Length: 378
Image (tube, rainbow, N blue to C red; front, side):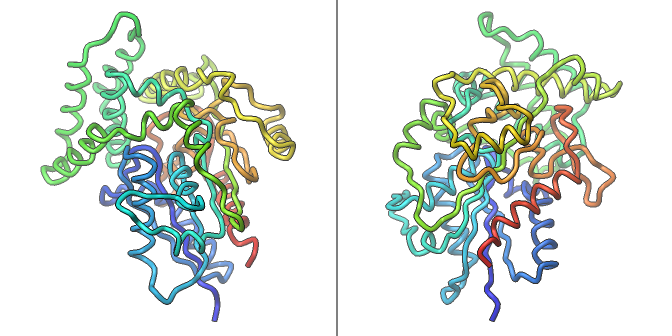
């Protein structure tokens, strides 16, 4: 009897996998199911529902519950964990020998079945953007960005009036002079008003989770992740691989690549704002890489990325862990299918225009490489 593989897709920061038709990993799941079927591999692909900004420990518990709910008691097939962004940290904690999860959850029976852990754009050394989100403005901005993401995936793009006002706010914002929280609140309410009553209630609950439990945010700072790395260890027998992303730095050329579309120009302003805070990675927090990891980055990018290189959310060199499976020019959400290619069916929708140029061809090549790694021992 053929071995059945179990692949769990673990969402990242404010992952919206539990919002009805808005699938965080929709394109990745469809690709995996089709690709492995073509290879004659029996597979179950599950998208994990995680607390959007709960602690890594809480989210690892969510992963355990997802595995328990989808795996028969007599099934001992291999498990593969693929985590995007913070989801990669959840996966690492899950398989860490002796991991202690909340509520006394026993992770070991499933952790010992894990064969591979693949992390995609994961902040293994932290991200300075998390430090920004700890502030009052950052907390409100995080909720608004969460709503932006859901809105764009549902309707295709933001209303221009909202986008203009938000872009103007970020352009004029000064960390020393402060800001007007009322404008963020107004934009928030305007976007919520476009959803049905039922979906609006669902979104309010989801975004309430983002605002009420922000335990994850301090854990993702370079200082917080240092403690995580000191207490989390690799499990013998598990193969670890990472997918690395580096986006184009904001520039006049990058802005012009968006053409005359005012929406692309405005959302590029949002990207520039996030990029500017992500590139402030302390030199002391940049991890040392193995010769093989360094060689992989140099081969992909032509030179070793500098400490300021990032994908708009996570520093590029913070993402390296285990074997570098592939390193691509993409922003933080491109790698999981959220890029601009509406002609594809189902369409790819980009909520933040970075000008990376990442498209379906690169997407398929990336995930085919991940599939090769997952099935290496079959």
